[in-house]
Amino acid sequence: MKFIPNKHLPIQKIRNSIQLLFLLLCIWIGIEFYFFVSYLKSNGITGSFHRPPGVEGFLPISSLMNVLYFLKTGIVHSYHPAGFFIFIAIMLISFVFAKSFCSWLCPVGFLSELLSKLRKKLGLKKVVFISWFDIPLRTIKYLLLGFLVFVVSSMSIMALSVFLNGGYNIVCDIRMYDFFANLTLVSLIVIGILIIASFFIESFWCRYLCPYGALLGITGLASPIKVKRDVNYCIDCGKCNKVCPSNINVAKSKFVISDECTSCAQCVDVCPVNDTLQFTIIATKKSINKKYIVFIITGLFILITSIAMYTGKWQNKISKETYFQYYKIRETLHHH
Image (cartoon, rainbow, N blue to C red; front, side):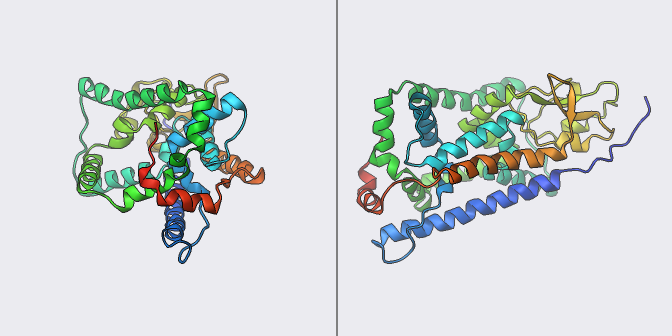
């Protein structure tokens, strides 16, 4: 077989740019939310009552309950509706391109990648657990996901309504802000351990602990588009295995079918032989140019969130008076 060098345009710089833009967007949302909380804290003297709906992307449990409520009633609840649409958008893009949210948009995934790049620049080797230890650790995030799904799915419409309308859900974003604004010594130690672990173990949080990632991994298994390896062109160089952040054995796979694949396309980019590794629609065997991933992932996210804005379901319907009321007693509120 004639060797044809891979001259396709690498998309890692584009992917990293999208990750950076999404991280900056999240930082901007955090700044806006800070002024919103300041407004409530000062009783309307400083800050602004403008609350960024994007903060609801950091409320996965509330969003999951909102989705279940919608499935049972056909109604998008008016409290934190943006979280509902963000959740749908994340699930959709992770279905089309397996778990792609984690490697294209997730700010935690991006920061984890930066730690890995720093380790490589320092010339330090990553830690890779052997399978008998790695597999049990990976089940942790699925156990967490299973617990959450079991609890939420067992709730009746009435129970869901009580939670979604309750004071705890109303200020759950503010409670989250309080946690990060007032970190305890124990919290700082845990975060420090996670950072150190992510430095030496690639995608530590995503691989072993993130229940959101577990859900997207299961969703990604059903994706109709997979990375395909053409055995007729493969020269067994093993470069794809070396760059895979999820430690997938791409070099021995016909189709990359794994709950850990994030569709980052690093294996496709590094392959030295043209068209050996390609994103392919399994049913039709038709390949997809990797540059279209950029437009499909970002396009789907923008489309879903735009629908929410156009239909008037992006901003929540919680009044200023209600926010003031529950902000004052937020520390006494608990979910059941």
